Length: 184
View 1 (cartoon, rainbow, N blue to C red):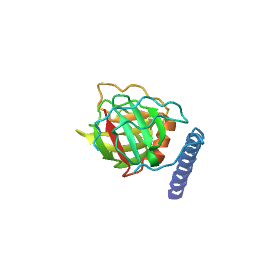
View 2 (view 1 turned 60 degrees about the horizontal axis):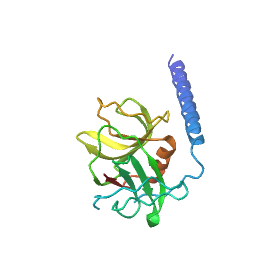
View 3 (view 1 turned 30 degrees about the vertical axis):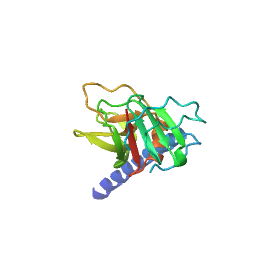
View 4 (view 1 turned 90 degrees about the vertical axis):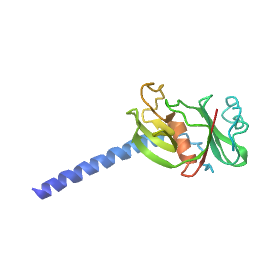
């Protein structure tokens, strides 16, 4: 009976690993081939820049958003800029904020998770956390299904939702310790 149970558990483990491998393969197939892999390294009283001119020539980072490699998050524009070496914007994109905003300021990425369930019950990936506000964790993430719906105002959430491709780019860029600058 014990060997039968062990075989059953082994079978379940093999099936679970196969499913995870398949899902990882599917996820990797949606990642653009041209994603860069730079690493993000102050007073953020700033004026945010306009949306990017084009994907190949994005607008510069917002004036007053600091210097060096960093992620810049504009609360007013619901937009993120990933700034690499030489103040070059490597990517910029719109996000959908949670119901709890971080204060303006400079932060560092404190932790990351490849896959978890968000406070709203949504399965999420590429979670990059950088602060807490009254017990609500604030960070960037992408929903597994790629959706970015407006959050339920009745639920306190700190997830700043990105598309799957933008979430993957953030995951590569913003490792633990990377600078995140929040501006108005």
